[in-house]
Image 1 (cartoon, one colour):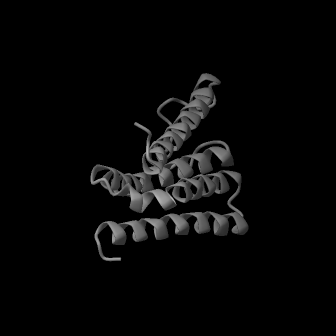
Image 2 (cartoon, one colour):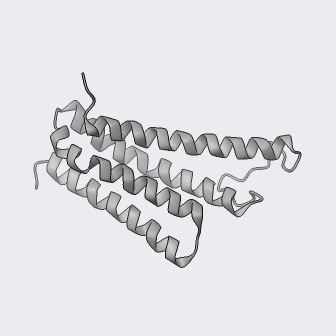
Image 3 (cartoon, rainbow, N blue to C red):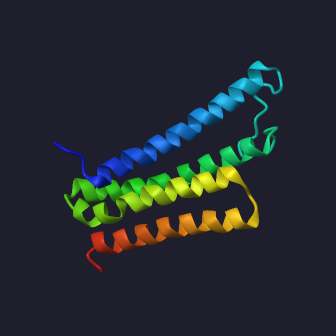
Length: 139
């Protein structure tokens, strides 16, 4: 049975979050193994990570993880109720906007990249709001 675009997007969102965790664990592991930080010294918000990229990585992962439950709930609901025809048309855009937002976050925190990041986030919010209205039968 072929996967719907909604299912592929759900798996993509989870894979992206997992990739960011692996990157973060790798970076932190290297810092510990090199003796640059103690294993129990990392601040949860990444604020004491020695590199600006590492700090952005922690925040980018946290943002991805914060949004994943809403995205997953809508996609899972659509799949479980056989309404993925509602989510399929914008599912790829949802995943693309998530990737765009994260990559923009990892590249820079300049004003331009913050605006670009926000644009990616706004696209995701608009899609989720549309899906919710459609799945609820309101729109």
